Structure formats: C-alpha cells, structure tokens
Amino acid sequence: MLQRNDGELSSKQGMANAVRPVQSPRPAGATTRNPHIVLVEDDREISSLLVTFLQGNGVRVSVAPDGRRLAPLLRKESVDLLILDLMLPGEDGLSICRRLRSSSSNLPIIVLTAKGAEIDRIIGLEMGADDYLTKPFNPRELLARIRAVLRRSSSALMGDLRPDTSLIFDGWRLNPIIRQLHDRNGVRVTLTSAEFDLLMTFCERPRRVLSREMLLDLTRGRSANPFERSVDILVSRLRQKIENNPKDPVLIQTIRSAGYIFSAEVKCE
Image (cartoon, rainbow, N blue to C red; front, side, top):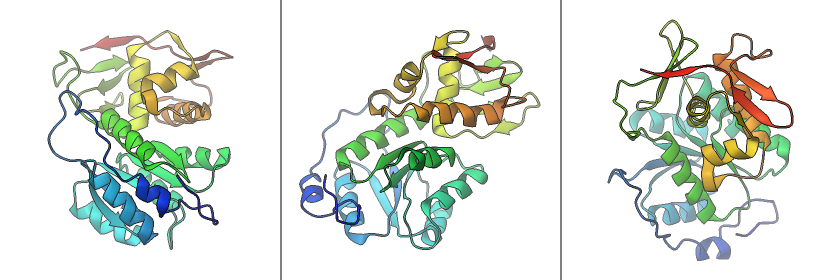
C-alpha cells in the first residue's frame, strides 16, 4: 500500500508485492463461473497491476479507461460488478454512477477515490455506490470488498424458501430469492445491492431497534468500515423509495441515540 506524490495509489513496489493470489475457500453454493468485473481506471499501470492481482484470484476483469468506453462493455457483456475510479478523463466517476442509477441499473458498484474526506465518501454513497475505498488502498482489501459485495448481491437460495416466496409489508412485496421489490401496485422498484440488503435486514428483524453498528455488521460484515454515516445515507436512499413522505417516515423510524426501527408488520407468503 503506497501513495504517489499526487495522492494516487502507487502502482510500483507496494502494489507489485501485493499481487500474489489470496487463497480463500469457495463459499457453499457458489457457482464455478468466475465473476466478471469491469475496472474503470485511466491509469494504465494501476490497471495492469490490479488486473494481474484480481485475475490471480479467480476474477475475470475487463478494463475501461473512461465512461465512453465503459458503455459498450455494459451493453455486450454480462457484468457482475463495477470498480469505478472517480477521477477520470471526460465524464467523472460520480456522473457515471449517477447515470447508471438513474437508468434503473442495480449493478453493484465499488467506488475508488483519492479524496478521503467524509463528504466525498458521503457523496459517493448518495450517488448510489454500494461501497467505497479510499486511495491509497491495499489490493487485498479491495478483493475482500469485492467478495463481500458479490455475496450480498448474489441470488443464492435462502434456507428453505421457495422461489416464489415473498416478504410482505404494508402492501409491498420483497422477494429474497430473485432480489426484487414491488410496490403496492405491483410495479418493480429498483434497489441497489446495498439498499436491498438493508431492507432485507429490516424485514428479518421488524419492530426491533437496530443500532448503526448492528446494521453495519449485518449488511456488510467484516468488510464494514467504521463510517457510521454510510448507514444513514443508505436509510435515506431507501426511504426515498418506500416511504410515502421520506421527510416524515413511517416504515423506517429513527430512534434518537439508538438507531432505527422497521415499524411494519412483515409476513411471509
């Protein structure tokens, strides 16, 4: 983990020392298909070393140096996750993230940023990113975050639930198998991977006060960063999608100095 004078991730000695494969057992139920990740990074040296590291750990990687060349990749390829640098030529990473989310894309996105200020991370999450990593970073941490986001976004079977099983709350229908949410009129509402995981966590624990630390642990596990505001941002994003009045929420209520509570009754059908 090194840092260049301009604040960017060093792609030389530290990075080269970190590209050895990380052995990790395949999780139960995982498929044999290697995940396909698109890395949007304009620094060729950093891209090359990250590609070497990720491919050495069973990840298929495509590289797009900017947003213009990302578009055809997303049209032609099946992509499991996007790693998005924010400082790009032409359209910046925040704009790309915002555009993808406005088009109802639920593609998992991990943002890379050389800006470590809290406000920069908040903006990235508000634009719809599922996770973020501040440069300089250890590529092994990036790999851990990739695996965590992919686990959360997978549609693996959950226990004994049937494919048509849904969780019902206040007229909403949440299907944990195909990871879809439908409103009271049957219209599908697109959720990011992180938003879906948060809503699932609430539905599994209705009418219980959940602290920010608990929500971080339940939704992000060991990859959680002690950046508590990330939970608040996700709650705000989720309220925008499921509350009649996000400024006066009824379903997800704030408990001062304690956390949040999901007030709806949840049924399984």
